[in-house]
Image (spheres, rainbow, N blue to C red):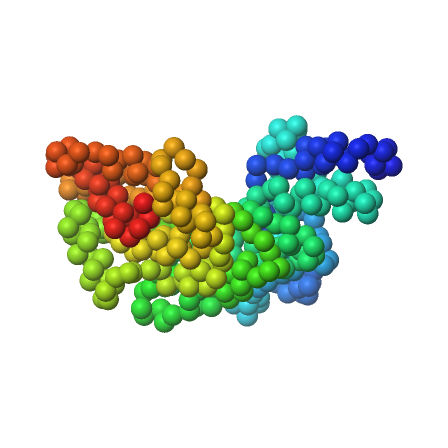
Length: 382
């Protein structure tokens, strides 16, 4: 088959490579590495634990030369309380794999076997595969998964990767083991950190910023959810401020310094520069709109190429600037009813055309919308 394929003109071969190897997204997920490194005697003492690890983090195919990293047992979503802690492993080795596409229509299924047909086809098809796909890492342990995947790429392949999507899990450092987060801070501080980064975050940012890669597009999803909102009829406590003034006051007291207020983890990421496109989806339920806006503004200024930054500044809502964001937030209304909202940069740019008379009448969710818009505008995000 490979010889007949090579008889075609290169333009036709590239079209075939693109049809077979290019998808909207190439999802990469973490999985438990093969458990063969654990002595059989140890596995037999707590078989249910290892069975749950295998079911929760299934590995479809063992790859001997694939990078692994260790996750402390306490960070796994696997129950181990029924066993003597002395019989359980301190860590479990994790690795990465292509996400299973069992529910994808047959015509869209993904198959890499074309890359294995011959050296020439591999060299030609590799360029299409790495340069035209967006590689996505959205698991809880997305940061170490992405770092391991990139470290295993040959230098020629690594330099071809142009687009990535990564999910950041932001939350209190009181959850999970101390070494799981970035930056590492005393648990008594109850600080917002990147969870489940496992010392990989600075190294990942460094790799993305080096000449070894030529990343042009980066999509970031930041999940910063912690509160549990329920109506008072359910006799539960609403832990978030229920007015804009209370929200601003809460954030000011929490930060204890002058603005800008930025995320504690953002500095390593700012080494990634000269992107052509930066898209951020930020989901939060904490009353920290100023911190979110200041962080977005800092990322925009440092990570986009100079040309894209100027274009974004002049961009109209209908244009396609180098910087886009969508804010998903949850607020508590005065009657203690939680409400979910979503605003894109385009929505907010359009709303700036509203007249002052219209804005003066805003109440409820519309007032929160204006507050978010003004906060982002003051920070330079619009």
